[in-house]
Amino acid sequence: MANWVDEITLISELAAGERVNDNGFENEVQESCRTVFCNKKSVGYSEYFKSQQTGKVVEAKCDVHRADYEGEDTVELDGRRFFVLKTYDIDDDTIELTLTDLRHKEKGA
Image (cartoon, rainbow, N blue to C red; front, side):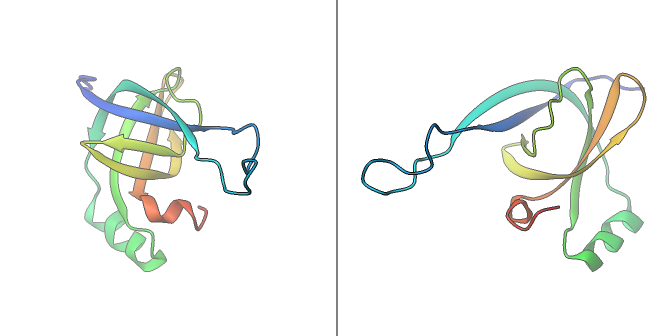
């Protein structure tokens, strides 16, 4: 049974008004963070080893309430940042987030 005692921070990037400043340097990306309750889940052996073949290792999974998740692709769990590799609808209220190393964000899912 789900206890909803774990916490995950959902991170979204705010759009900068302009990509570059007056001097031609890139503006820093601003982030918006929200911490919500979740249920951490274990990653099975089969899923872990199959994901290694793709080069995007599934490192963690967790369930969050659908009302809390707004499509963020970066999260922080247990002090470490992850990229949301995929989502899976569990039921009308719950969505499962499959997480991988943050470096895969640049490569696209």
